[in-house]
Length: 358
Image (cartoon, rainbow, N blue to C red; front, side, top):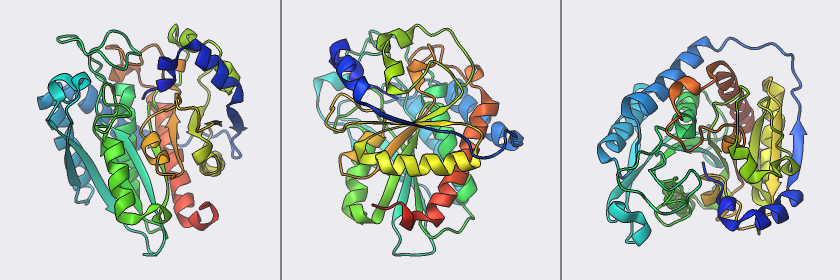
């Protein structure tokens, strides 16, 4: 996950955050916490494999990156999908360093809907991890030999969520179809460049399906922190509370711009009807170019409603973009409950999608 807003400076931050449009969605159901033991076990297995067994995975660690691709594809196949590897070449830019000219891979699977005319929903998360750079918020400047992050929360948690959502929907029948994607190259120095995996995928899918045949997109991004922790990183955005994101761990955030505001809020309503967690839906003006959360940005560029589902990353945890982002730090019980809520939200969305398409 990235907040490109960091590179614009505090003055830009102060100008932007007060005009964010925030809405709190409180749970409508009981406070009962559902049994998510099997889901917890699966999510934990994915994260430990990605972040502990494989570790730092990006184009600067090609063997680990290859193992991550093989693992994700293998999991999809075990569910009965036929994953499509979509390779693309990283262009020649000095900031990409040794990754210039290398091949990156997006991974996609589809589960068609019962109505071939109904638009598709896209759910995707990046599997790459941050390489070693000067500091946690650097957007450029690779440091050879410096260890990057193992990426348990950012974004092993997002990939694990995509895998378990795909498992949930493999035999479900809904009116609208769903596309699951695991992206390469979300982290710097690729973020918001032509080499960003979700940007490549968004361009391809829009060309193939057309914007009218895409219901929307959401990305599970840093989902695993729900316990109070010492957090000095939050001071980098010391007015973050003005955006409606309090310094607590008792909610999940749906982050977007005006492009995805209505879609995000519709999904927040569906989520809180099914899950114990409150949702804080925050929409920033799209003209604020400094605001970009994750892979949802690539689809917003095409006018597709999109948002990031997140625990708020560095606003909640100092492990963000650090070597300390390890699997044992994940709060698996709460994390599993959020993923279960996303599954129920997604089912309701796909069955009643005609109500949400603007």
